[in-house]
Length: 203
Ligand code: GRF
Image: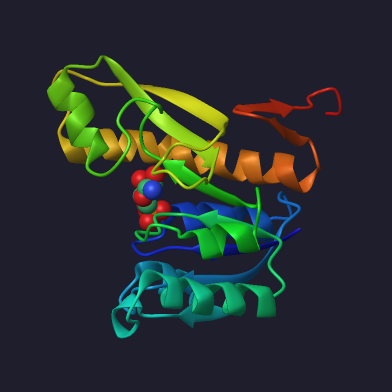
């Protein structure tokens, strides 16, 4: 499976996918790492691993649609079959969704549908939740609303800061995101409405 990974930040999720793919533990070839942020650590991680990169700075485009059209063309040229959002801080327009129907996935650092949006580790702590976690989901036209593929639960400790909780959640993100990609690569993932079924009969 040819995958493209889109990241705006540090890229620890990207790194976990690179590491497993280099060990031959993931049936996915990373054909491109794309960022909207020239400063993204993710671009450096990709370059260090010898992966093709593209940087498309959203600030030079007049509209979201023009930015997305350029991103789509770049992803198609790279032959991407699955689009993996890993801390990509841009909302996806219909142009992007229509170009890759049911082929865009995202990871979110909370247990959806609780705490969609931004700064969700802090929001979970302030809410007083005892558990939070992370969610891998297909991307649809809403913000963090698409069908859920995988989740992991993480406890919130009384003395947690936003940073300590985020780090504990990231450890789980680095497990479930590659797992979900592997399931998709093996053709085990089927979407029916909101529900995603994983065929676990073949192990
Ligand atoms: C992760 O917490 C992910 O859930 C969210 O953005 C963060 C990206 O972290 N969507 P990293 O760049 O992969 O380290």
